[in-house]
Image (cartoon, rainbow, N blue to C red):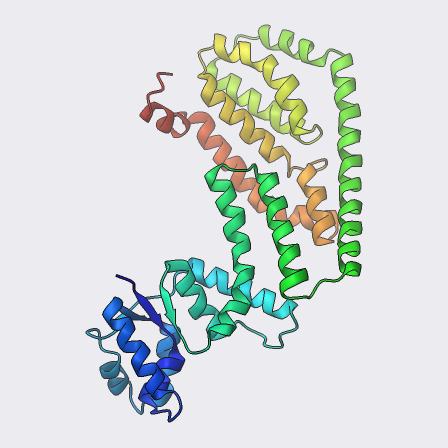
Length: 337
C-alpha cells in the first residue's frame, strides 16, 4: 500500500475541467486511489481553492472520505528552504520559496509518492536537499566523524553545484579555497599562540603548584566543585580546551576522587566548562572563528554572545550541584556510581 500526495495541478485539472489534462489526471488519480490513501496539505488546499466559489464546496470536493489532510512537516519546511536557496543560487528571481518546493519536500520527507504532471520542477530542485540527508545520516549512523561528514557534504555540494546546476566555475572554486585558507591560517595562528602559552604553563610546573594548593585546604565536595568551576572557567578565558583537558583536569581528578565526587559527574562538569571556555572572552577560540565567518567586530559578537553565555553558566550550575541530572541516564543503564 502506497500513499500518494496529490499535487495541486492534478486537482485543478479535474475540478477546473482542463480540456487537455483532465483525462490524464483522472486516470492517474484513480490508479493512485487503488494503491493507497490520497493526501493533501495546506499548500495544496490553498492552491486548489481558487477553483471554488466557497470554502464549503471546496471542503465537499476534498472531503475526508476521499483525501486525507496532513499538515506540512517541520523537516519538509526546512528542506523547502534549502531547495529555495539552491534555486536562488541558480539564478531564480522569486523572493520566497515556491509552493512546489513545499509540496515536493513534504512528499520527500514522508516517503509519499507525488502525483504531479510536472515532475521536472521537483527533480531540478531536490538534489540539493540530499546534502542535509548526507550530513545528518553520516553523523547519526556513526559512519563518519563530524569533520568527515562536513567534508562529504561540502564535496556533494560542490559536485551538484558544478555539474548539475552549473552555477560554480573554476574561479568560484579558487575564491572559496582562498577564503578557506585565510580563515584556517588565522585560526592556526591563534592555536599556535595558545600552544606557546601552554608550554609556559607546563615548564613553570603550574599544575603541580595547583595540586599542592588544593591539598592544603580542607574542602568539602560542594566547595571543591565550586572552586573547580571557577578555576576552569577562568582558565577557559585564556587556554585552549585540549590543554585544560590534558593538563589541568588530571590535576583535579585525585582530589575529586578523594572527596567522593563521582568521576563521571566531574568529567561532564569539566567538559561543559571547557565548552563554555570556547566562547568566553578574551581568547575563546570559537569567538574568533565566528568573527572571521560573520565578518563582524569582536566587541559586537561578544555583546550578542553574553546572554547565551549566561544560560550556559546557569546550566553548568544546575548539573554541578544536582548530580542526578548527569547520572540519571548512566544509572538507568546500569552504572553503579
